[in-house]
Image 1 (cartoon, rainbow, N blue to C red):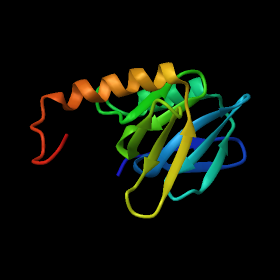
Image 2: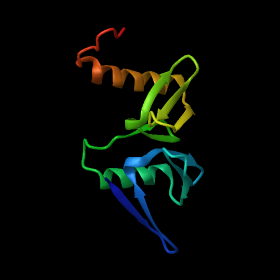
Image 3: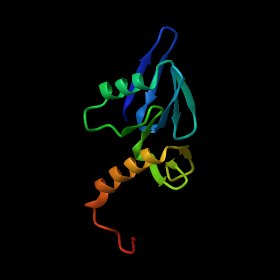
Image 4: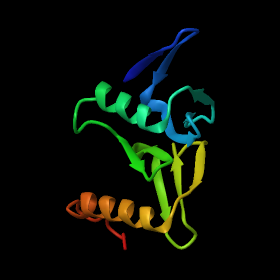
Length: 128
């Protein structure tokens, strides 16, 4: 379980990184959404969150992927990429899912990344 603390003048936030579905830019703030649906507002921009993640997690071990200027997703929850309708779905395959609109160009890059990563894996019987 990976955790990170954000200490401000008025509060201490302890974030469970394994349960975060995505971070979304909201002006000078960032909206953090857990896979359960609980959301928090962070008083830092998305680039600040990205720096915090890279400082906290060892290089090559982060499951967070930056998509454009306004979104960082946890790729462990990625379950669907739809290029035609321009969205992706983050899901725990249990009872929670988040459907996020993303540009077609970014979705193509993400799809290529995952295709290359899992292309070497043997195909399941009956898989297309």
